[in-house]
Image (cartoon, rainbow, N blue to C red; front, side, top):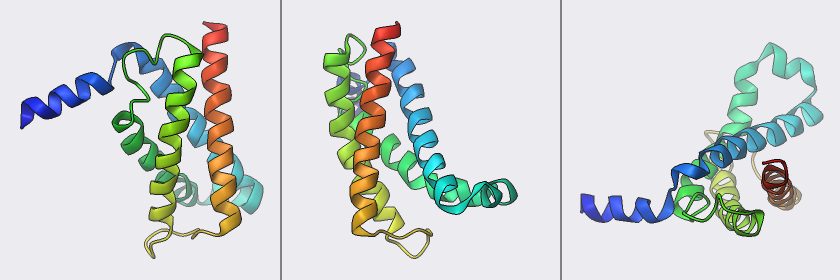
Length: 139
């Protein structure tokens, strides 16, 4: 069983994609931090940093779970934007669903509304696509 798991992750993770992984996490954190500040003001974030962390954590968790499983860092992902962007978008679709599922529980504030479902999906798609495209243009 351990060999099957190792083989699975060998097909899904490539060390050359590490800069993409770091950038992806930063982009997700920035996007949802900006949304939190936009809707709640900078005061709540500076006086209660736990509020910000609790808001962005479901999206980071969703990404950390979905991205490796769906091949966002698979061999070839670090080769070109043409390869990397679709892999990120596919993973974001699942990551966002995981995040929204977490937000739907009573343990996390924020909840989910239809407008937020659409916005979080689009913001993630656009943010990750722009970041990954810029990464390859600037590399």
